[in-house]
Amino acid sequence: MKLNFKTHFLFLLHCTLKVLICSVIGLVLLVLVYLIPTQRTDDNVRKSSQEFFDYSAFNWLIWDNTDSLMLDNYTDSWILLETAYDTCPDENSVLQSAVAVKNSIIEEFVHSKSAVLLNHYLKNTPFDGTETYPRYWHGYLIFTKPLFFFIHYRDFRIINAVIQFLLFAVLLILLVKKRLFFFIIPYIVSCLFLKPVELFLSIQFSACYYIYTVSCIVLLLFGEKITVKQLCSLFLYTGVALAYFDFLTYPLVTVGIPAVMYFSITKIQNLKTCFSHLIGIFVCWGFGYGFMWFLKWLWASVILRQNIFFDAYDSIMYRTVHESYSRWEAVKMNFDNFFNNSLITILFVVLIITELFFAVFTFIRSKKNTDNILSVILPFVILFVLPFLWYAVLTNHSYLHSWFTYRSLMVSSFAFSCLLAKLTSHFKMKN
Image (cartoon, rainbow, N blue to C red; front, side, top):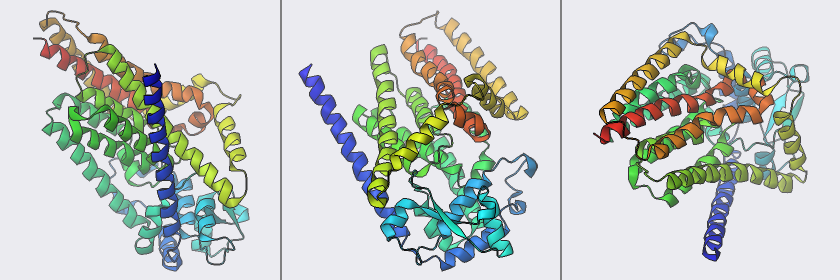
């Protein structure tokens, strides 16, 4: 017992140091990009605002009419206003600006960032105030500030589309190279539920896609040779990246999809080992995510000399407790949004029926061998229910933002389809 306690304590200490170092690096990077002059950036944001609602250049990406696109122009406008904010006349130091993350506002349109962006840059309405948002890291600024110094929003969308497609292709190539053919179509169909066109066109929706895709690529590169220590480190850094870059959009995919991928490529025969690996994944991801976020509140409180923890606590209470709608309503709203495309839904149903047929067929051929079947099923079942638990806890956020939080259900769809594929593979090996 002493050895176990010492081992776990040292592990926790190492994780704490890693996240602490990441937070310092993240803070330094933000300070560096805040040193970039904003005059050219402001000009490019002006050009961006002219094309903010124009999708004509992206017809090659859109198979449906643009009215069906659910883009978060509110948050992307916010990001652009933060990116173009001029710190020169500000009395704060660069460090304080990087922590406070200010953006200019027009009081008349204080509740609509899109209106602020368009009225200032297209109608020359002057800004008449500023606001801060120190609760989040806003790590995307380490990319948007340098990028928008050279390009504008339309250029960004093209670059974003190309990079996301290339990462998608790399992941598929690795699945082929690893001979994981059973999991290729489940992954493709599950990705369609994310509405990839919306990801291409949005800064806000892109962070989680990049994080989970890179994590999956790393897992596939290591394959079954990945050690428990490496696995824990990967999910720790995945949680850190999520806290740094994301705006609480569909965070569960960053742990759920790589976890499904991990249990798809490994052949764990022991139920206890399987369960301990799953718990380790959740703990490391959760610690990286939660502690990295906590450190932002800590640094902001110290540097700005104000208590950010009160603001964070109020936000947590508001997002988890709300009396005007039930947990069931939050789950239903997300479920409805997830299956709002009939073509993708049909593809998914056909996939599940086909996989179920092959699973039953191989099960019968294997003489109904159920050796170690629980170690195969358990992780996928737990991962399948994970999004529903998330919606039940974050009822307020999941209900109000169901038009984008529904993407967390990709974890359920991918887990279910991969479970059937894994069972087919498992029974096939018993022949």
